[in-house]
Image 1 (cartoon, rainbow, N blue to C red):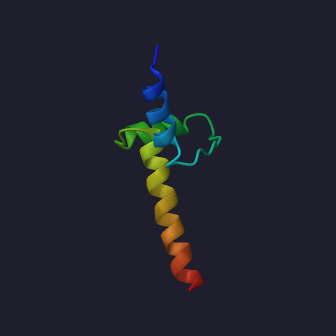
Image 2: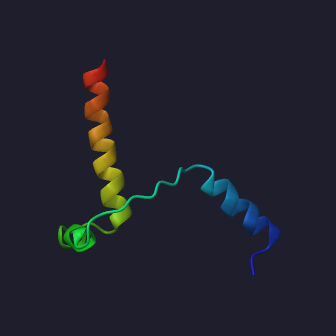
Length: 60
C-alpha cells in the first residue's frame, strides 16, 4: 500500500501529462512492435509530434 507522500508524488507526476485513448485496427499493435518500437506509446507520441510539427509549420 502506498503512503500518502507516495500518492501525492504519483498525482503530481500524472498532472504533467494528458491521457488520450485511441482505437486501432487489430494487428496494428503487432505491426508497431515488429517495426522495433519499445512501446506502443512511444510510437504514438512520436507519430503525433511529427504530424503536429508539420501542421504547425503549415499554419504559420
